[in-house]
Image (spheres, rainbow, N blue to C red):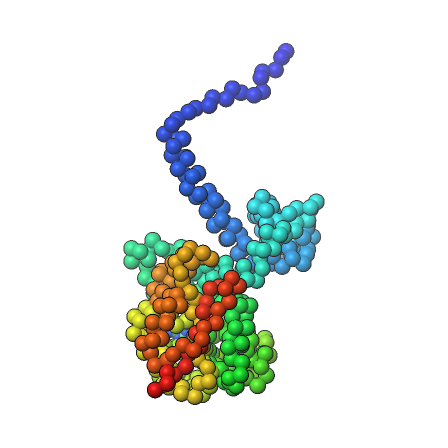
Length: 352
Ligand SMILES: C[S@@+](CC[C@H](N)C(=O)[O-])C[C@H]1O[C@@H](n2cnc3c(N)ncnc32)[C@H](O)[C@@H]1O
């Protein structure tokens, strides 16, 4: 007896309207965007589980400990997905990071990703509620200060500390105050590189200050630095340790004060300069927003809009602000193409 044909007939339907609708979706780039979103979440997941460390240093074999502490089925499927996405390569039973996987998981890449996924993820996932007023930033929704401090610290150490140290050269600063210090990396790095330097950091976020204190302990400079919780934008409330400084820096924090208008920033600059006439350096580092869509420009803009912060500006706009203050900008340090776009403004009292 002959068996029935194993392949059933295929009926191909053609529907112009359905085709058009699907084309809109495929031409929109959304398929790639959805994939990119999941790659971001997956790379972040790699970094917050033991998986990344194991993929870097072994064990790389699931039966040999790669998936210890990880749900076995979910873990196996996740590895499969990462291979499909070209992030891992499988050889026999072992998994390795590909070159793409290595680039995605450098300290710098993970810090950039962490700012958006970990520190601001809870904000960007509530855009609708923030728009309708269902949620209010600062009350129902806040960025996560701990991870923000930690990720900014990684980026700072790599890209900004060398610039700040160069700017400080020859100024003979003995006690540096970092205003809006976040995770405290700058003060810790500066103290590590100059054994005669002491430092103070002030930040409004207790989690960031806790991170900074821990970093100082781990780095062996806790006896030369102090980190305090306080309002950077209210210098009159600063504890005495802050006002004893003979050097001041303020990195990626001052623009937040634009939320109270430009004059508030001018007043704050004047207040700091008047309160601390002994300053040998006053260095303001500010991210440059150029609205040219490069290097996550728009993402950076969005998180500032959603979190009710003042919006960062480009250097020309900052020159206008300084011109209204008692300060003049002596020089600007930049390092184009190497790190987050940021200008370091070297400010000093205007000669009377
Ligand atoms: C983008 S982070 C920069 C942190 C650090 N300076 C850096 O560059 O890595 C901005 C910091 O300013 C702090 N900040 C914002 N408003 C503040 C205020 N009123 N007083 C003190 N710190 C403030 C935030 O808590 C946050 O740690």
